[in-house]
Length: 334
Ligand code: TYM
Image (tube, rainbow, N blue to C red; front, top):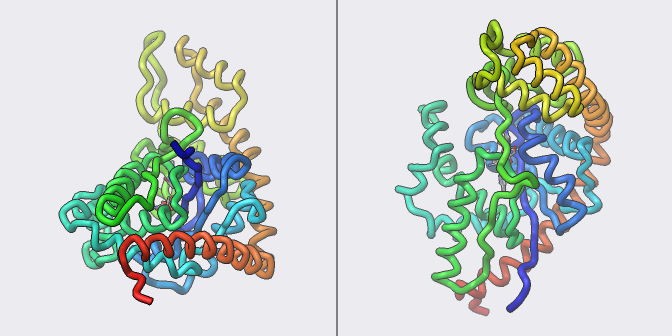
């Protein structure tokens, strides 16, 4: 039996500033995976057109996503780090997969239903077939490991279905990709108001961005939702308090976490102190990333070289896959 070759692929839409959710759900894994596997990471500019048709700020956003990923430790020499629209084979594969995807299943996708609610005047076909384009991104490199946050779980399930359908109809070309996280479970970083998750374009006052300055980080954390505190020892934590502890686990030292945990269990916790401490630990975490990203962002020549190198690597992998795809489908008439 042939051994499975692990190949990694993931993407981020350039629809706003990157935040802690992107970091802990996705980018932290990218940086670790690049040491272990062949990796393809991509700025999903085509996907962003489904919700952000105005392209005037797109270049700026694409550059920022590139810079912030590199500032977090992504190495464009080690991986293929590219822009989705620079690899036109993506669109060809997307077309083929569209013939294997059914309207009913696409309409049932949670992200589609959310977007219909958010933008009722722009329910475009690209929005409906969003998971098909994502499948093309992944399978273009025949990747099987996809580091993503919890919100992408359903898209990955659909990608597996589309891969299976293709293989069943035309022959075994694709692996069945899995959502990946180094911990056991996929991550969801909650928003600070206890209502939903951190997000690029919604919930901005309750989201911590990698570009936020020190005062803004402290201010957002001080405003995070709390209450009068536990009234009996060992009470279960309400969601929004659980969230604060979850954030602390991401950036604070173990003894700091243990201190506040004990204070909670013993009903002596002062949430003001906890938020202040979390603010300082968060500033220590975000500041070096923000400063490094700003320096990289200002170097357009460097970013252009990164995109060129990434596109070259991604296209060479894409061409190999597309040769297999066309041949499996019988689209080779020469
Ligand atoms: P996007 O741009 O919304 O988010 C990028 C990555 O960040 C993760 N993420 C989170 N993780 C934990 N907590 C949060 N609050 C949080 N918010 C975002 C996302 O799960 C994602 O991993 N459809 C994708 C982009 C995409 C893609 C792909 C991903 C396009 N093609 C191919 C994987 C493979 C998206 O909209 O991610």
